[in-house]
Length: 399
Image (cartoon, rainbow, N blue to C red; front, side, top):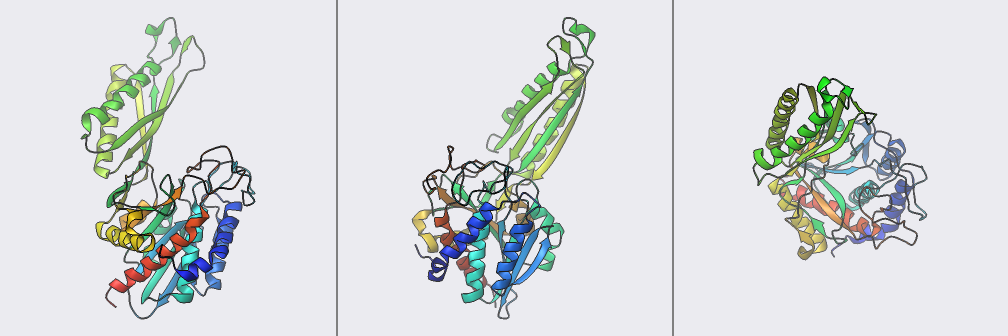
């Protein structure tokens, strides 16, 4: 590997920061302590700091020379409402909260890069360090953008990274185009007329209607959507009734839709509305569909993705960079930033969990799992990638 020596020398300092963040997890839009830690370290290294962006976000700005070229580097800071099973020394000190997705590692890697660039950086232009709140369902990226992120701190491109269990530790995965799906939720409420279960002809059965709707929705995936357009429509909840001998007045079902393109999402929502209305009418019931679009698909720009892959190969070797990694149907709110600016979102392998110490917990080291822990061996890799990415990106721009 071609890691930056000064970053390797700072490994213990950055690991301590990572484990401090892990031990003090904060949920979305509550990252007050984490933001304070980030801001104070950036200031200690002489970086211009802006607090309270998107409520609890932090932005660091580092300028060199006279070039107007700029690059944005983003890390997320929030934790999850999970009770940690790990028993190591840096386990969560807050019951019911845990860094189960590695945002502690993401924040630490970007801090490591900021420290090096402030002390040793060789570039002409501006690096914008974006420490984002509320990735886990809170659309913190959207909140920062709405708060003027790219107006106040304009960048030519923006880059993000996420650790990925299952990919060998220290390997990168990236792809042009969609890398993560859109995230959307729906709830369908069916209203009928209750009756005695022995006399169903006296009512209008919302339970039977809900089942027919649930079955019919799958026809969108198998008969309306192009087979080559990837999408998932999952009914995950059906709720109705309180007694075995009573047909209730109302039932509801809910679930999620995931797609890699907005066009496919538009098609699915449109067909869902028609199926819900027509099926309910066929059984003399009334129905209402509430469809909420959470995060758009995360779509990497071709030029920035190819450039990022070149930098990855410089750090870990070309054989450890998968430039056509399989996209995931999971979602990520970095997608909002990629709607505003070209850029690239990539995966950094977290390994199979063998890095964890004894007493790590009973479960696998997967994302959103109570036995997860970030692999500290990645800290120098991620920080070196951020530094080389910024330096190479700014060097290729007209000065």
